[in-house]
Amino acid sequence: MRALTIARRELYAYLRSPLGAGIIAGALLLDGVLFYQHFSVDQKLLSAQLLTQFFYDSSAATMIAGLLLSMRLLAEERQTGTITLLNTAPIKDRDIVVGKFLSAFGMLTLMNVLTIYMPIMIYLRGKVSVGHVAVGYLGMILLGAAVVSIGLFASSLVRSQVIAAIVGAVILASLVLLWAVARAVDPPFNTFLSGLAIHHENYRPFMNGTLQFDRVAYYLMFTYFFLLSATKVLEARRWR
Amino acid sequence: MVTPESVFPALPGSLIFGKPVIEIQELYKYYGDRRAIGPLSTRIEQGEVVGLLGLNGAGKTTTLRVLACDLLPTSGTVRVAGFDVVERPDEVRAKVGYLPDRPPLYDDMTVREYLGYAAKLRNVSKADLSRRVSDVEELTELGEVRNQLIGSLSHGYRQRVGIAQSIVHRPELVVLDEPISGLDPVQIMEMRELVRGLRGTHTVVVSSHILTEISETCDRILVIDEGKIAWSGTEAELSSNLKQEGMRVGLTLRQAGATSAAAAEAARAVLSPLDGVRDVEILEPAEPGEGIATLRIAISTDVRDLVCQTLVGAGLGVLQLGRERELESMFLELLGEGTDQPRRQRRKKKSAEITAAADEKGAS
Image (cartoon, rainbow over all chains, first blue to last red; front, side, top):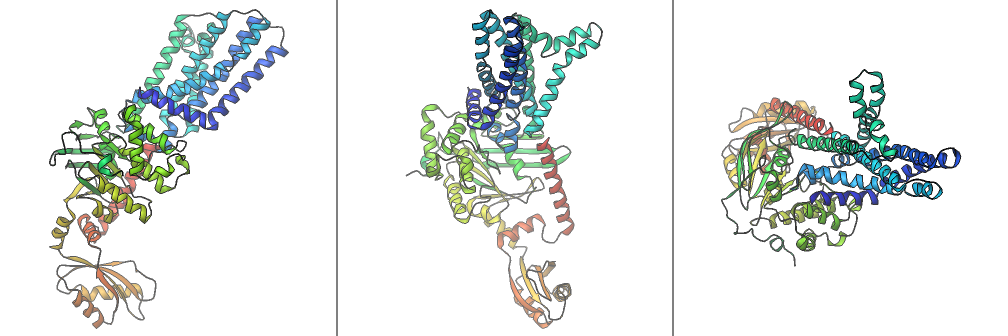
């Protein structure tokens, strides 16, 4: 319950400041430009391929926006000293983390929802299934949750938002590039590393409209791991 | 009309003086390998207004943060309202209202929104929320700015909002860290009224390095020095205790045709042998001018007239002679700051180290 109170306050902060709107507008612009490139210029693609390409492009915008939205969550509270209000209130550290996560995740999901006009255009002019669209969006939302959890974890480590964004970007880039590392190593490590990569092997089925529950479980566990890590960082700070 | 008593009615079961609200035993807190506090043991009873007095870096803020469960102790036992801060932190937090030295305010919220948010975080029910916020706004005289963004408020109002958030949930213990910091004289008077208004109905711990502030608002003083309780008692007890050991006298004099240093040394040479003079300390000259020197004299009996006569007899003109402010003098006496130069330097070094260590921890 306290987590929802915190989430409401954070959503309110996003909506009142130009930061939230700016990040969403920038990500939507990126999405729109990439979509235009494929939709209008590169007309050789089939509609299903175009939809797959849309989900691929949107994943980049989602990852960038997710990091930027989450960089302030805890770092700003520490920088301004408002973390004391949360630390001295009768709430668990996990509620603080969940509340913060929900707010950034909510904003990111809002951004994802605002891209729906692009799949609708493909749907109206081509031949794609609603299931493909739905699974693609599920993948994007799960990827967004994972990225926000990384950003939140990075934000728990430092008090500068910029450094939090850099730390988050380094973690995210490492996890994205694991698939490339996997190509360079021998079995069975290649399978293990490509299974860990946040984007390539795990996101591709969603792009293609295939719902695989092990991939869903991967993103959920991934998000849980980083939220738990952020909670432990908060708990540890009280002892320092 | 809203009064502290109406906003903070007596606790259920009525107030029981003598019942401890805070019990601290052998508390230690380290930042890395630097000891910030410890060993620290004390108890504070229900309804008391207690002042935590100490120099910067003495351990006041760390102690208060432990009481508010913002920090956990390295070792020792701290119980607030019967609950251990390590084992039952949520119960403790529900019973404590805390104003840190830097009020935790969101600039993008209005005063009313912020107080509502703080109340919700502290488990105030929806039914009570609006009334509690209105009451506390009126008590802290925030009514006229209730719909303004906190970012647009003056320092005084921001401090009041900080106080308001710490009491909006009617806590059993109110912990205020330097509450008058940066306030103007009128606001200081109002803040004192507010703190005094909590006396008897709630337990209050106020920290300050401003001596008059503590003596104006508190029933009891805890002097904290290098992380330990150096002394505990009322101002009157402290005064009578130290008066037995004499008093301190501030002295400004002038010797025509001499340098300040020479004038000071000349004064020390004639004063030190006097009966009743325990110590003569040379300070920075209190005012500019050739041959002007300032000294502080510790005397065991009241020999001020003799001091004056001796100086004049030695060709030293007395510009000013008077007892130092009572409480200030007592404070310095307690902390051994008056004459112990190496100790003062050690303290400055330690204070800087602790501050740097705390900053480093905070920045990482």
